[in-house]
Image 1 (cartoon, protein in one colour):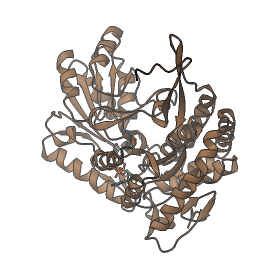
Image 2: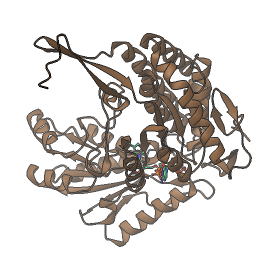
Image 3: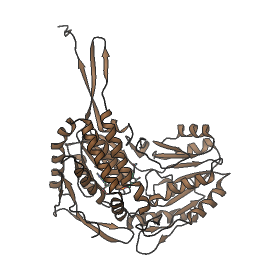
Image 4: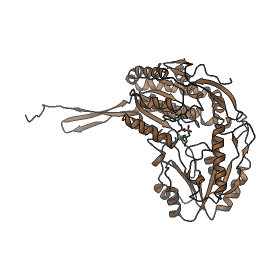
Amino acid sequence: MRAQPKASHFIDGAHVEDENGTPFESIHPATGEVIARLHAATPAIIDRALAAATAAQADWAARAPVERGRILHRAATLMRARNRDLSVLETLDTGKPLQETLVADAASGADALEYFAGFAPTVTGQTIALGGDMAYTLREALGVCAGIGAWNYPMQIACWKAAPALAFGNAVVFKPSELTPLSALALAEILAEAGLPAGLFNVVQGAGAVGSALVGDPRVAKVSLTGSVPTGRKVYAQAAQGIKAATMELGGKSPLIVFDDADPDNAVGAAMLGNFYSSGQICSNGTRVFVQRGLRDAFLDRLAERTATITLGDPLDEATQMGPLVSHAQMERVLGYIAQGRAEGARLVCGGTRVGESGAFVAPTVFADVTDDMVIAREEIFGPVMTVLDFDGEEEVIARANATEFGLSAGVFTRDIARAHRVVARLQVGTCWINAYNLTPVEMPFGGVKASGVGRENGHAALEHYTRIKSVYLGMGDVDAPY
Ligand code: NDP
């Protein structure tokens, strides 16, 4: 086993195994090789993790924020020092090319730890003058937070949840996707080495049932899920049963609107980044590329030319630009959508096939002449499949961009900056880019509207989702009772 962890779970500061749990394997999708064997959490393991988190949280919340921040800072430094090992691990688990994981995964996780380390000591309440009496507010931790992750950015997702939760005084029980169980364990080790007290960051493995057991447990105060819309509906409903705080980071089918005055090469580059990076397995991808008719032919020619140069192959080779999909099942799903796009009459500009025979590789694929009603323009494919749609006018494209149940993100390319602001103001999404795409620095809040989710991760907005306000009224005089 090339990436076998010491044990399946990490609880109360230690590696924990329970062989009574259902066994499962982590597979390197470029080769099909088994890289680790683990066990899903049993009810006893889940209980142990929640008990440890509950026991550790109050003391952690009572510490000076600067002390909590110092530990997270140390963890960020350790992560940066081990970036290469962590990147290789993420590449083995997800299949994403090392060229990407070296810059995008542990590195962005470390950014989150640093950002929230610095943020924690700045958190204050309010004082409220009441003409004699007064009130003040306290920002309190929520308690134990359950984090549930998707498989596309396992380390980043774990850090985007753990960093604010821990910085503001919470404890975390994190369940990674069963497809990518390894990097959350590496994060737990790093946090422990950085001095995080035992019990504050626990990792339990397993499929949806383990996630559901966490969400339903009365010891959990808050649930943060990154996943698909169907899972989001279930988890949000279950959290509502317990009247729990919830953040839902879900899927999308985001519009990328290219007006004909845009810089063509920048627009093509952004469309490629927003469809082919991580083999297209990014929630915020601009998978509906609306190109104004005047630029359409030049855009498609340049896109086909540049797409043909993408190097697919062994993701551990740093020259490789595109790896496989996360699993063979995901590859089959994506190939199914490609077949559907052809059957619906979309024009295949390039790609459209599996590459090789053993790995889960799909060629970067572009469909043109796509119409709004086609399944490939409506459903999240989560693979390297770009759909290009034509449009004529601004009003038209805004209406068509908004005509979806999703509302995660959007991009606008134009040199007319007034038009750019006018259009983004009317797009029903949580995150917009103007003349850029898919950049998600930790300083900027990120999240969706409509079916794409509730709540925000990152930025100052995260404070609202990992703390609550306690109001304190202070009577300064006698009690004025009419009895
Ligand atoms: P899934 O929705 O299949 O799974 C997400 C996580 O939820 C997994 O850990 C899964 O476990 C778990 N889960 C499944 N059912 C339940 C349940 N009933 N209760 C609790 N937990 C459950 O998503 P994927 O892992 O397939 O990830 C891809 C999806 O994630 C895409 O739709 C993508 O758009 C979205 N995503 C959203 C992002 C955002 O920030 N908005 C970012 C990244 C991805 P397991 O899979 O192990 O069974």
